[in-house]
Length: 457
Image 1 (cartoon, rainbow, N blue to C red):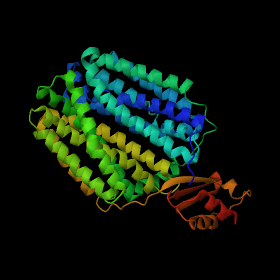
Image 2 (cartoon, helix red, strand yellow):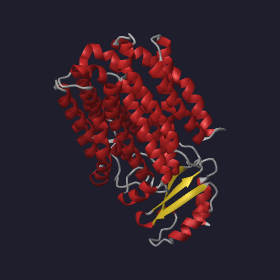
Image 3 (spheres, rainbow, N blue to C red):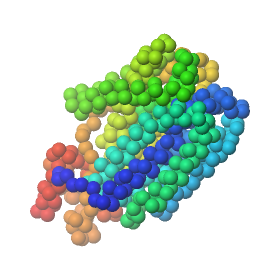
Image 4 (cartoon, rainbow, N blue to C red):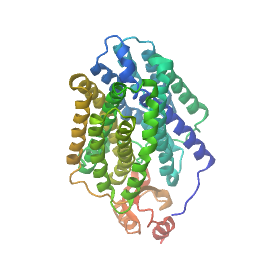
């Protein structure tokens, strides 16, 4: 396929939506490395309730992100995004003025209720051409990773200067900034509506939920975000126990993040060459378990602590980058948006459960045993992915039916058979009522001009 560049509108949309998404996600990430420390000063705080304060954000995201996406298909993307950001800012302010753990839990719940993820992704699809959509989504995805790295270093650095209330006020300011970016930075989209590549189609959800291969990935991302949230309930407290001042935690996280690239980059490369995705997944899951066991037993020496956390970040980032791609490849053709919606719901549910589990385990079992429990839970993931198939390389491609035939009547079965015979086409589903053919293609083999010539012949 020929490679084309972003148009000016696509460049502007990619930059502004990446910033919107990144600032929004910092509402979750900024608190990860500091909540278990600062939350202890709140009235009525217990380890379990501190974990709930971290995790309740994920619960509300899980509940509302699909409904918000469906509403955005009807009334437009930007109104839903503005409303979600308004809830996010309100929740941040509620948490900022609260001096009790229950007030912070209420604020975090309100933050999470502003679930704009699906609407932002749909807006990105509205503002990009089909052949540029994957690149647009990749840029937004990279902004999430960058916001995670910045947040886990920035949170501890700000902790001693701003306190918990100040961090929540900063998060509220970021929400306002995101709204201003939507208003003045994001181009106005063309008519939106449902796009099967990014939108959840309610009628597809039954088949998606019954798909055994997707079930393994949904359970995988749930477990991964459970581990992330539970680990960050425990790790900051463990660093304090080992004599590292809270204000210096960012140094540990920065060093570990940089060192983790030595794990992440080679493994991601091997997943596409030689080892395959399934084997690299298994290696990364085992590596994540080893990281949890290492954190539970590591001594007080700074470098041994950094080594254990480096293992955690490295294998975590491999899995975090691979799983969405796997969902995209395995999802039935024309149902990618629905599959990603269920996947995102599982992801946020994992964050909620991780907060609860981490808080309970720390309070009842202690730090070392909590990490051992998380390591054992990680190994159970290997059982979850048993029988997982190596997915075929593919990406989505949309073909408007009016480019094939000006007639309103389309022989769906015949057209699907004809398109499927073209080199590089993995699968196809023709939706005559939507005026669109949804394809899965192997980009290395597919040629757009060959497809058009074949259909014209």
